[in-house]
Image 1 (cartoon, helix red, strand yellow):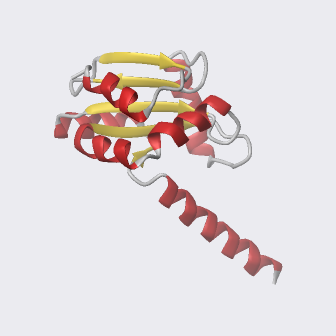
Image 2 (cartoon, rainbow, N blue to C red):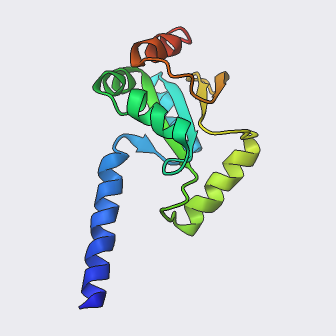
Length: 144
């Protein structure tokens, strides 16, 4: 009985995480390939999704809104590099995230990096100043 409950719980958590992260990749190189093919900006968010108050605010106020989702579908390839404390990432993803934090000199979360379709970094934004979704999208549109 316990084993069945654990398996069911794991399946439900996995399904929930897939739904919550719909449209978000977890690999920067795959995101860069897609951005180049589609002529879009690559939006990479380094986050502490379940413990960092500014990360949670950015997600709630901007990234999980319908307005941002519509803009992202047209203009962005999304990648999330997460450093959770309450949920567990698989070992390969955890190692990948750690390597990317070193490569891009993570110095606080949330940290957003934006690259143009050719792979050139055009924005590094650390922290979240509480902008509205409209202001945040305007900042991204100015990068095109």
